[in-house]
View (cartoon, each protein chain N blue to C red):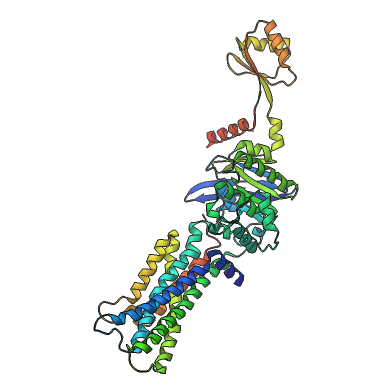
Length: 228
Length: 307
């Protein structure tokens, strides 16, 4: 399996995607810093606000980023028919597809963490000069959000698989990416109030499970399905 | 010779339409099997079923003496194939594609890539990604990829598509080499008759999803008789002369003025002399050969009528 993952990474030139992940992380960092210069009303009054915002931005960004990876690793192979080459190898098809899905999940998970750390730490360092938020960063808050970062990164890397379901129906890259944007919006849109679907803890959990189910469904029938 | 590939009543239905029906193929070990049929006859679908990309609706496939099932992965390691047209990871270079193929196939031989490129005569391609290749180059690279691991069975779908005449000859020679020197079995599809005639040991003719005929080329050659075609003033008179003066019985009156003499013993000058002596006007006289083409068309037309 490790070998299959290695071959996949070689094939798709993962380097560019990694670079893109870092660029996205730094853009989010840039964003949480820049908003502080917007007029009189301060967007963040305490570190908790910053951590919550970073969490949200990174989640949204990497759900969409994951759909680009899904397109690159899975949808494109079906669309270009290079999947026929892959499926003529003496390797179980389930393993071939699983390797691809593992890459997307791991990538999204790792960049979920990297993005959150980069964006928040960048803000923290910058803040030590400008003092947008006065005072110390409480350790308890850091631990609380640290755990939340980990849990959310894991959960959102599963949620990010949902677009695969829509993308696989007609092997369409635009469908995959648009559905990822819809998933991201559905979870975090608010109606002028503070309420969003993702605040009800059970909902993201259910959707994450759905994401895993989508991955299972994509793999399940691959042995008996015609590759046209 | 034992058979390396066999299908029994192979059938595929796509959306209620039978695209392959009851195909019984028999490919013998070490031979070049020409799979001949017009576009849309079902060649590619059969080949997709043989490589497990498409699952049969009915019937069985037996390769290397084993039944092909949805989980027959190991078997694929002993086969090389091009299906439909050569597909690559086209952002990668040719060498990268071949190296990756070897890794997936579990074949580790550093020299293999160079050898394969050499065999298909692909040169000066080091810097270009495959997406900049012409169809002919892709075809060569596809063949290189199929043969790189020295598989026992090669399944090549229209491999000479997009090649120039010189390229076609090179590839034809390569196929013969692979069959003779490496002992590979080749299943090659094409709709170009002349090519098949020159390289195949056995020909399978498919039309409308049915395998109409499976025959050894040697037997086709035997069947293809030469004949002399005569255009005369009066074919009945000519027939009379043929029967009574030359004692030829193996001839056929095509119409009022055309006679075909199939008897190989009859010489052309003798024929002319005798006919002229008996006042038969000769407009023209030709020696003709009915090739695989005639044979093939007669098969296909027969197939059309019965469909």
